Image (cartoon, rainbow, N blue to C red; front, side, top):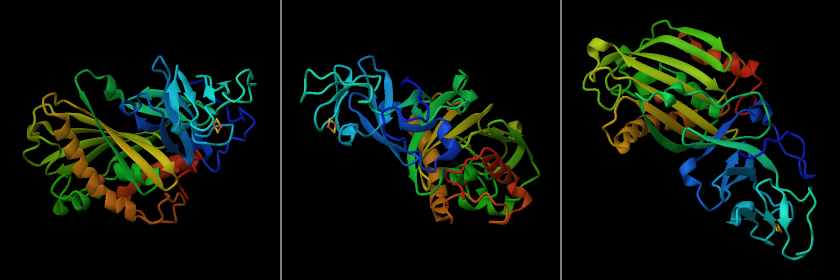
Length: 345
Ligand code: FES
Ligand SMILES: [Fe+2]
């Protein structure tokens, strides 16, 4: 893990945190871990261009994608002897971020100010996570990850032209099943939502006792079933759902699954989405489970990208609501209370 930073400038350049607000202190996914090998990779998080790279030990580093010398993108460079070398004048940076070699002046010993801007980074759930400023928050919890009885499958990324909160809200929303996912997760004639329970939690909310009729609840379902959902918001832009079909109608005996959604707020109105599936199925190829998730999310995507405004309105008067929307209302209240301004309006 790279050294944690504060919001103070580390190399004489002001850190431009623009309007990212409280979300900057949370961990956000930015790239598949497997996609980061020998070459540096450019990613974007909350309008900030970052370079990710691995040192000689395979250790991950996340820096501002800007050389402190003349502002070239460090992601154009390469890793040499465990150091990141800028593509422009060949300055080399050690894993601490500090410049250790200037080829044009080989005898020059760069001072501490000749440093790249370093951010905290770590790997979990098959993803690289970065936070822009220090904060008290942990990575979003996905309890199923450590359940040996559930097989994990990675899905995504999906690039979606809307804010991250709009995508979380859609993930919590059951009233669209019979329309957006007709024949799969719902049916027009059976789209009434029975009352369910929502409670606030430290990381967002927990919604329980949520029931839906689902013609094709999962990849192996051969008949419709009532399915109980449990939703948990685990971070401003992350959530988990757990589905348990009614035992007597479940197509697959003892089927259970948990799905995490992890979203990178690329900008306030553009997002990159991953799903992490945890399922009892140890036999199907990854591609079959990914294809099902792909079908469902590509049904959601056009609707999500049509929503206006793209930023989630937190003022209750900005959109109209029914009791079926109480999970999304609780999510909006949570964002407001946590002062998450990025991706909201
Ligand atoms: S801009 Fe990077 S070494 Fe000059
Ligand atoms: Fe959906």
